[in-house]
Structure formats: C-alpha cells, structure tokens
Image (cartoon, rainbow, N blue to C red):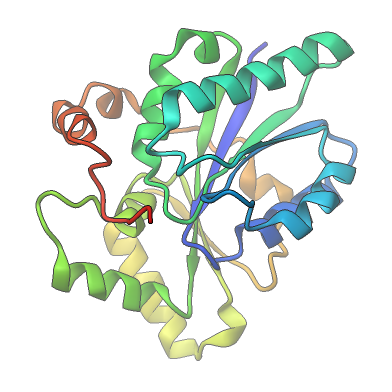
Amino acid sequence: KKVPVTILTGFLGAGKTTLLNHLLQVQQDKKIAVIENEFGAVPIDNELLNTKLSTAEQVVVMDNGCMCCTVRGDLLGAFSAVMEKMVDSGNALDAVIVETTGMADPVPIVRTFLQTPAIASNFQLDGVVTLCDAKNILRQLASYDTNKSDKVVDEAFQQITYADRIIISKLDLVAAGEAVMVWRKVRAMNADARIVGVIRGIIEPRELTELGARDMTKIAASTELETRSSEGHGHGHGHG
C-alpha cells in the first residue's frame, strides 16, 4: 500500500506551521512523517521543530534552497530518508506531509513527484493544500495583477489554482465583508477545491487527508511549464 502524501503550501506567515503542529498534536495515534522545506541556511520554523519532533514520526528538513528550484534531487533524497526509516523501524506510515516554504510554486513539486519512479512506487499524492492569509492575500494577488509578466510564475496564483483544498486562515483578523471578498476571489480562481476557514490553525484532521488529488498528468506533460522551468527558476522570487 502506498503512503499518501499531502503537499502543504501557502505564503510565508499564512500559518502553515501552526496548522501542522495542531494536526500533529491531535493525530498522535497516527504515524506521520514531515518533510520540511525552509529557504535559507537556518530553518525559519526552527523553534517549532522541537514540537514536531516530539509528535511526528520523522522530520526531514531540506534547508539548502527553495523546494521548487532544487526540487528533484532534494525531494528524492527526503523521500528516500523517510522510506529508509520506515523499513528500518518496520512500521508503516499513515501519511507524509510536505511543508513547503512560502515561496514555493507547487507545480514543479507535483511534477517531480509524478515523474520520479522511486517516489511514485512507494508514495501516492493525496493532494495539495493551500493556506491563504485572509489579511494579506487580496493585496498579494492585486500586486501580481499589476506587475505580472509572461516570464513570471506567480506563486500565490499557482498555489490557489492547483489546490485540492484551500484553507483561509486568520479570519479573526478581518471584518466579515473582507472575508467574503477573499472567499469570492479564491473561488473565482479555483472552482473545484473545497474552501475551509480556520482561526489559529485549528482544523479537523480530515480536512487535510483523503483529498483525492485531481488528475495531475497535465502538469507532468505541460510543455510550457517544462520550458519555463528549464529557463532557470522561472518564477518571481529572489535568492539573495
């Protein structure tokens, strides 16, 4: 049986780590491995890793670059480490959660997952979960609309468009009218994904599992995205 994998994405500050820690704490009867991608020499969520280590079956930190830029080798290595630990312990995992940096475009991550037999033979993509910060997402999307370029893949746009589940966080920090505007904007960008609102990362675990990932073969076969990826990073964040 293949281990289901959830890709947890969303902009820095949207509340991914808070959400993940809540999930691990309420799911302690489940064996969950976490692959943590942080951009920079020191993991941004370093202080919270101790919490994860006490509740997750295993934590693998990929801290040498943005996951969507260094994805194939690093992601394969991370999944290999998870698989090795699973074999050594003799215990099957219930799930793997890949928490990306806030800068990560999920498309190359999904493509790598589908096109790497060593990963696909043991793990099954359950879906992409995207966190949208209710307080900032409209501004982030408006900035993209103003400055968009054919050569720039906007991460917030990609994260929402390809999500199987969308979590709108920090609803307690915005007025009801603004929350409705956020919901309408997100729904206009993704007509299929279930949208769930959360406050302080508290969410039912079932909202992050059994997502039934959509057919991602179009991502794997997309000539445009392959070309854009081969041109370099192919998206709009800096690395220096």
